[in-house]
Image (cartoon, rainbow, N blue to C red; front, side, top):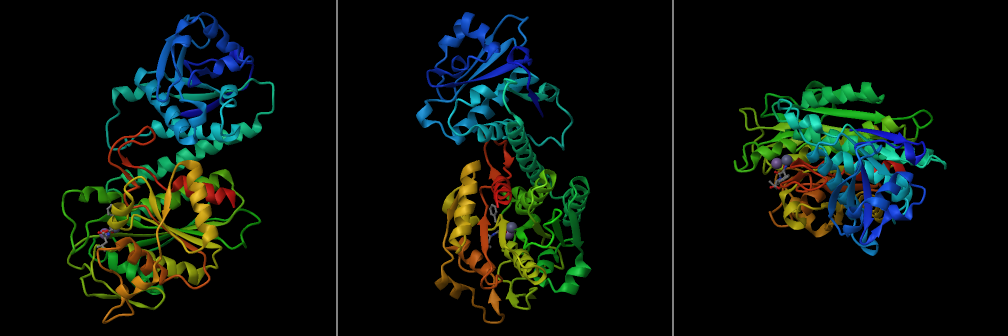
Length: 499
Ligand code: BES
Ligand code: MN
Ligand code: ZN
């Protein structure tokens, strides 16, 4: 769905349908005397007076067919005191879905009406564009085009009164569009079946995006990985016919090439069968999205390059397929990680931390980071602890932790702090190697995080985001179809934009 602007006088606005926000009893359109387009509706349409503006209420009103906008969809936001950005996003998303169901192909959102709502004009514009686009997302790449897809809304226009300065609002709309496109890219990658998205295919996609948006991309293949000593990542890929890759992308805009980069690291396990410690069959197919972290950091860098954000950001994606082939790593094997430490592999299903520890060590060898944030579908234990609606946040740097939580709060992604509890480091002691990579089932998200911290040097600002559970939607919600949610993309983008 394309985003357009109608900047001229409101009497010339044109679309299939006007989205009219209503705030519990308050008809926002009535508060906008400058909206000529609304006048006929307010004057003659009894329907406008019948709706209550309650949360999730949606009503379709038809006007005279000759009107430039012949229909109105009222969008109930509930009482003003209780209106927050989550309610607002859901309402806009619901309205966009409703328009699709009814087959309307052009929608118009009156910005002067948004300006009367709490939350700030720019934010409301950004969030409404982003919400409308995310609401309409579905993964269609594997199917023949269906008949109803033809009726998807083709464009959403923001209507402005044409009298005041609007550039800052256009920019806000573009930010919302870029954010949504980034989430959509991550969802598409994560929803792609494992047979079609091998580590090499993910690397090729990163190279393609780098050309399209103008950032750099370097791919280390299995020979280079061996040369640089990334033995833990190589171990993960050993049992697969598809060799591992470390994909490195960098957004370094002019004048910022020398600054310390923000380094994002995303787990890129393109399929996680569990390896020899094989997973139960029941939900194994969902493990095609075990590369959501990699998809998220790639999408963020693509968005930053597209926007030209004046900040240096790198993303590392350790990619491998965890399979139980004849060459697979065995429980009891010892791998040598990039920092030289030996790692005893206890459970081959704890492959994510093996891929990540090498990327963490390698990143610190090659660069001096301003901060490192890793994001990974790392542990079932995190999903058990927090449920599927939020991600775990492990970070001993209070400033960084607060920023991540604040950025998440702004865009509706929630990160709950979990402890890097030092006494549990004891569980990672190995009889044979420098460190064991798996602790007991209890506190599994914490020991995984402690294992990662072993590879982070003192003094390096670091946060670990465990998005297992949050990355996947078991049921449809207004902003997300079933399948990959693209969780984390918006938060990391918000963070990189606001530094
Ligand atoms: N990719 C999984 C974690 C996961 C589970 C993500 C469910 C999303 C939904 C990870 O590689 C894994 O298998 N972790 C194990 C670790 C255990 C063997 C220590 C787990 O959580 O069971
Ligand atoms: Mn696993
Ligand atoms: Zn995994």
